[in-house]
Image (tube, rainbow, N blue to C red; front, top):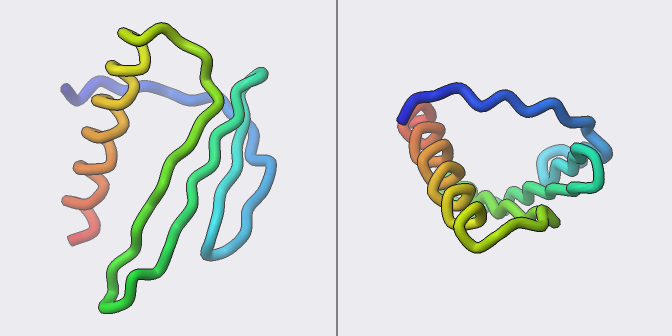
Length: 75
């Protein structure tokens, strides 16, 4: 919905151009980039966040929206 959601996290690993690992408290997140060829890249996001089902659903929806907006900016 366009709201800003700041993330105060620490990068733990940066492996160009494959992977970013960052943490906030006990939560660890990994973003993996896979070259699919033809100028396309697959981005996979994994996190260890412990949350209720409702919060997970909201997080999935928020991330999907953010990734869609990123794709729009990159095209």
